[in-house]
Length: 488
Ligand code: SF4
Image (cartoon, rainbow, N blue to C red):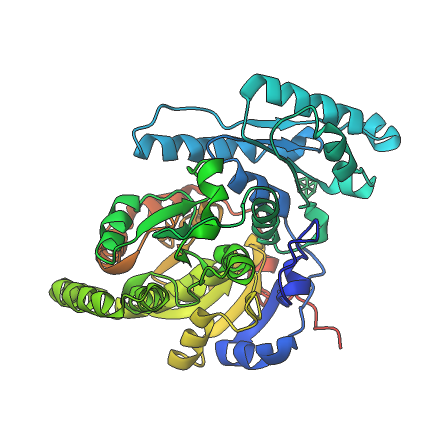
């Protein structure tokens, strides 16, 4: 399904990409059933709390330097803003920038508003936020409540267009609409594509680098300079003016396939900016595939091959030593689908055996209509690998970890990683998206795993002092006992 920027909202992932949040099987079965998007979701008869699309959308957009976010919602929906502010401060600090808070407000919908409507409150909040911060764009994010009561957000923004001299952009990301919180990233990118990006006036030598916090920006600037291009980091820590010009770039790459699919494919489709649809740049196979895709897009294949050959040779001795130390280690992976499938490959490169891969959802295709490269790669190299899909249901993950007892659990979310430690299983949360990035990242990630495995006292002591909230009954059940059969 092509991306339609004439529509006010992005269709959710379940509809657009055949995304599912319930599955248990092998990677080969998953890939085979994905052909033609025929894989069926398996519902749960019980589920714990999880994330929501609105949190994803507003967290991502709030990182744009001169933007403001208004969440048209009860104030509880803005709880994630605290985390967004913390990561924003971290991002400021690694750039040696002055600490500043994100510009985020809630319209604080109450019971009365759900009966009588609250577009007046929204209007007032927009006027106040503009006066207070003078942002270059105001994004208005929706919520379950504003969606259910049918608030006419677009008309309110249209009415204010003459009074507020910056784009007022709706972000349709009601949590109830999708079980896949990454639908929120698409809602955010749809808002950027429709409300911020301008048609190109010229071509530049920038390469759009879709990412989160950009900790490896120095390394990427130096790497790209060897190919005569400069990164334009999208979207956190960039200005609205910079983002408005992404249509002029020479190519788009992404640190994460889940994150980058919508904007990358949208820019290619609308403005002819090639989107690199490779493995993600983690580990050796990942960085090679990613750089080759970039080299092809910008006509620098020779330079890229020379860089790869030099770097691969440089890290070979260190990688060999690490493999010798880590060989025989058994790991379980629990992450979003792009990171999960890419990190299974990265761990294999380090000599580690992955015995289970759990991902928080699964896209049967990306927006260019093809299966993600990363899952294809895992299916080719580890065809019987058990794979499960759950929207970070900790009761399933804890049960699974308790049964498998791996040497280490590698997760992308600290909320999941901590539970492994409470079971006495050392874990690493991959908070920084550039962990294991490229050649150097692979070596430092391997060293971090080795450090974690050789000092297990944190997990051991935590497990000794923790009482798990689950009963013995549950721990003895099959971890997917509450997953229902797929509907025919
Ligand atoms: S948008 Fe819905 S799911 Fe998300 S935090 Fe608000 S009420 Fe919860």
